[in-house]
Every structure is written in C-alpha cells, then in structure tokens.
Amino acid sequence: MKLAAQRRRWNCGKLASIYQRVFSAVSPSLRVDPKTGDTMGVLEDVLGFIRAALAKFKTRGKTMKKILLASSALIATAGVAAAELSIKGSARLGLAYNEAATEELRIEQRMRVNFTGIAETDSGVKFEARIRLEANEDANSAISGKGPGAAGFAVSTGGFRLDVGNVSDVIDSGDAVNYYGYGVGFTGGIEYAAPFYSTDINVGGFGAGGADATTIKAKYSAGDFTIAASYTDDKVADTAEVMVGVGYSFGDYTVGLAYADDEALETGTVDGDYVIATLGGTVGDFGFSVIVGDGDSFTDTAYGVSAKYNISSATNLTFVAADGGNADDATYGIGFSHSLGGGVTLAGGVGSDRGNTEADLGVKFSF
Image (cartoon, rainbow, N blue to C red; front, top):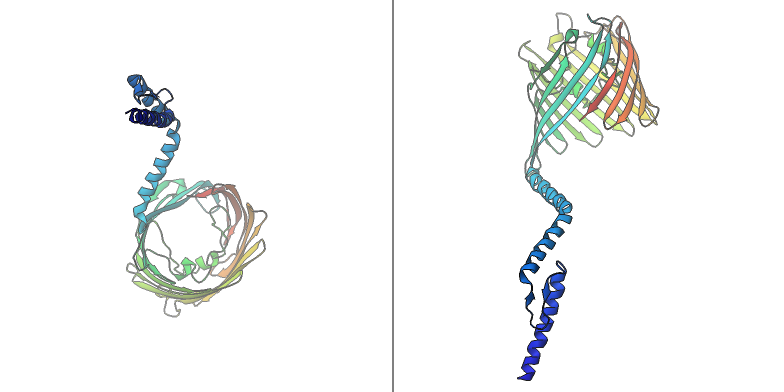
C-alpha cells in the first residue's frame, strides 16, 4: 500500500512537472499542484491562458497575414496554367510640330492597350486571339478613341505559326525584312521607309479599328532561318496581295528579302509586283539598318539607312536618311532617346519627311 501510494505521488508529481513545463510556455501564471496534479486558481489560469494565446497571435499577425496572402495568390493562379489573358500597352505624351498641318504645333497623345487571350492544348498547340483599344488625337488636336477593332487570331506549334484576320502581312510583321528601321523622335515618325510610302504600296498591320481586308500569314522558323508568306483579301477594293519573304541571322547581323504582288497597283502598263531587301546589324554600341526596294510602280529605286549609337546604357542617338521611290524630296532626321527608368523614356527628334519639316519631344512608356 505504501509503495503504491508513493508511486501515485511520484506519478502525480511527474505529470504535474510535465504540465507545468507545457503550460508555462504559453502562460507562466497557469499553476499546477505538484502533489495532487490539480490546477490552482482554475478560472484565473484559464483567463491568463487565453490572454497569453491572444498576445502571441497578435505579435505574429503580420507574418500570418503574409502567409495567408501568399497562399491566396497561389490558389488564385493555380487554375490559369492552361489559359490566360495578357493585357499590355503603351502610351506617349508630348509636343509635335508638322509644317504641313493646319495647326502646326499640337499636343501629341496616344494610348494603346492590347488584350490577348491565350490557350494551349495538352499537346502544346497554342491558340491566341487579340484585340486593341486606342486613344489618339485627330486633326486639329481633337481627342478620340477607337476599338475594340477587328480581332487577330494565331495558332502556333514548334517553329510554325499561322495568323488570320486583323494581322500583319509579311513586310509589316518584320518576319523577313526590317521595314521601319530606327525611327527618329518619340513618335518615330521620321523613318527610312518614307520613300516607299510615296509609292502607294499596301503594307498592312494589326490595328485598333475595323479592317476592310482579311490577312492570312504563315511563318516557319528553324534556327537562324525564317520563311513567311501572306495573302491579303480586300473585299471593299476587290483586290488581293501576295507576299513571300525569307530572313536569315548570322551572328550580330540579319539579312532579309521580300517579294509582293499587289493587284491594287496594277494598271494597263504597270504590274503590281515589287521587292524589298534589308540588311542590319550591331557593332559594339553602333546599330544600323539598310533598306532598298524597287518595282514597276516605282519611279526610282527607293533606299534608306537608319542608325543608332548608344552614348551610355540609358541614352542613344538615332539617324535616318532615305530617298527615291516616287518622292520628290529626300527624308532625313536626327533624334535622341533617354531612359528615365521604370519603363519611361524621354525622346525627341527633328528632320524632314519628303520635304516637310517635322519635330517632336515627349515621354513614352510601356506597361
């Protein structure tokens, strides 16, 4: 009997000691009788335990909030692995001068937002659909907006991509040739493609408004080699245009060639075909692009050169010179671009676009 009683007292004391160590971690005021194992001041100790627990949760509240927010973000994004909606855009604001305009000096403003829905099959075939919203200034600095316009669709797998609808043709897309080069100014309005604009060739791209024509373009890339073809059917003008282009990259250089046959350019004595070739590359901080083109509807061979020189990691100068085609005057200009950080750029330029003096200065940014 005495031995049993001693064992019970020893067990109670041992249990009480364990309880005491456990409870003291959250509430030092919670007391256990080492002889009987009974709690002392039960009500006070329970209240103290609750107060201690609440205090510990308060001190850890910020960490817990971060954990919950992170968990919520993971849960929210877990279901969009196979499909997504991409929203990207750009904007610019500044002053622009155009000698030929009714109001020579205007506030230049534009905002574009592209909405692209993307889905991918289990076998890796990607489907895309895109529309654009745009706000811009009209003649005499009036402000207007347009869109969503006609949609463009794409299907791609491996090195193959098919675009249908309101999409760019071979020349505009840059798949084969660099048609626009380094533009001058924050609008990029002075370009070495200016002589080609005077020839009335139809180079079309994705836009915010409606489209009279449907374009189908196929592209295949393998390593440094790209081949592309497009067909544009204009139901309003009842004309069609076919383009085929090839491009090749070697080191820091690219070369491209594009051929087009446009029914809209055909007359009784003139065919609607023309060809454009470009060569570009970089040498250290210097980048350049050269373009040349000719066709039956061209009075003279069109040609141009554009260049960019990086003064620093944030600042560069651009230069454009072009002539020929059906233009009476040459195009030339010089500009600068300076990164302000955060995707914001200050840029400007001045020059002559086929005899018309133009200049601009402003900021542009992407988001």
